[in-house]
Image (cartoon, rainbow, N blue to C red; front, side, top):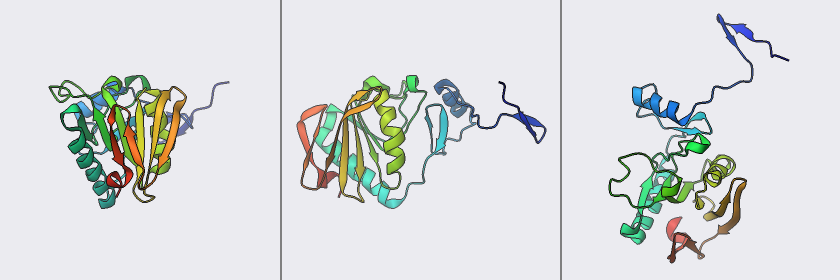
Length: 198
């Protein structure tokens, strides 16, 4: 049975419906200026979300992770912060706090990193932990990103997610202070949890 359209302000609309966008539409809107360059937005499964303003504790946590990871990984990886990833099959362009990428000579000038380029995604889950766990982690698993971390500086813990499947990550582990966290892409590297989340 066809839902009845309600009339308001001279336009028909369908209650409870949303207009979802494709990755191409989203990128085009940004290109032509419909979406402002200074707006902190991300496309998640076809919906455009406004990101939380970055408060100082969050910014500090991201800087710490960026510094520690870049120092240790050097030229073996590109450690990126708060830039878009292109997950076309999921109609998503998320902006994780940290992404560890395969090195590329043009530093991804030819286009945003895609799943095959991404070794690890880290979200600093302080004020957004529920959203990150319920929305972002399953999104990264569906895109076959091999490893995702939720770093919670308030709780002084890091939760790692590994073995992605379309239904979610199969291996989840929580790390506390003094424990060492291995990085799957670089098995020779182990990070003390406290150095990453102080």
